[in-house]
Length: 186
Image 1 (spheres, rainbow, N blue to C red):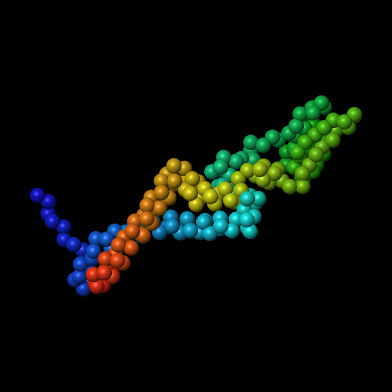
Image 2: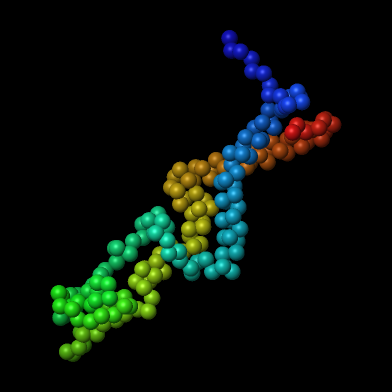
């Protein structure tokens, strides 16, 4: 036979209703997820004004989460004259130093007897990220929990169920204590 559990009591000796205990526990357990969801939701509601779909984060953590890597970008170009590559600011044709230029190399073309070299004003990593993930996508993934994989989605789902339980237990306590003339437990 199991020992009977005594109801929890307040310092003044009055009994705490089980719905109140559940309501408090669910509220505390879901607080962090609710805060993250609310903040990301508010920012997403103003995404057009903040131009989130056209702005791209430059962050190593986000690059890793979305498997974006500047290391995967080409470092040189094949031409009719040989392999054109850039290492730091130095431009090489095969193994011969050709020129020095700070801007990133983006292409090369042989025209008649001339080797034309193309550079970009933006860095190559910015060009790559520009076609990658936007702030809007990152916020949507944080908001839904997808940024953290299946576990993140389940955590956000659990927080949603907690919010539903909070709404239901709060409404139930409001009407129960209002109708019965009792004071709500604190």
